[in-house]
Amino acid sequence: MHDGLEGSLPITDWSVEGRRKYLEQNRIVVELILYESLEVFDERRVSLAFKSQDNAKDQIISLFSSDRFKLGELPIGIPHDINLFSQINFWCKLKTGKPFSGVQRLVDEEIELIDAQSEVGTFEADLNKLSHCLAIYSDLVAANMIYFWLQANKKLLDELGNVVHPLKHDKSVCVAKSPTRYKVDSSFRYLCVFLNIESHIPDFHLYKSKYLTKGENKPQYTAKKNERESHHTTSEIRSVVTKIIDYFYRIHGDEPSLLCMALFKSIGSKTLLDQYKIKSNDCTDIDELRDRLTALKFPFREKI
Image (cartoon, rainbow, N blue to C red):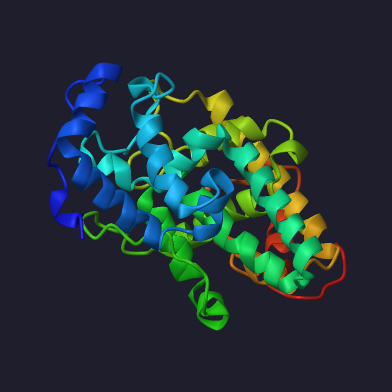
């Protein structure tokens, strides 16, 4: 495996010519890393972006040596050495040119195609979407947030059995002693991806730029800001959170799929309000908001 290469074979010349020379010097190792990484990555996502795993290896190498590749556009946390070639999520996004919402539409389109051609049941289609969205989500948040999501949904994942876990907990980073609120928070963020709510929530970009943008892998697991957030912006983001809760509550009332119900259950906790520090002065009726969150834990309810 290529784990022992961490920190080795740094890429020092990022010009087109420099990258091509790097490939000439390290071609065998690059191809080995790509082969191993593609073997364990989500095969459907690879097929969507590159048609096949065989094509993926050659096309990723071509992308690296092309004018399209820009050092300044590498996301936070992407290695600047040989391990860059293990980042299949990144290469899929570079190949398709799809951002967060665009990748989501790509996933939805693929599921619709599978459902039409193979008569896949609703639950299996949801299961495919669960795995794909988890891969997308892992590219948007810090590593520990994936760990918290896996812990929060452990029972569900054990029952499903065949859901791909794209990322494991980074043991080098200390996890909070009371992780409950982070489990709820990570489940909440994931649902924003799974339900593709961006176009349905006013000012969602404010929430996305803070909570669905990768930052440092430490509490509060938010995007790294160059300047202190103003009180007004903080208040606006909390308002967006209340709108998201209301939106989830409406979907829950429409009796969605069993899988979606299970995902709602993982965010049905008043702890979420504490995590986002939402109090009575942030919404008109804090008690109603708490009730709506609690209602998400149950499969059937009367609308409040």
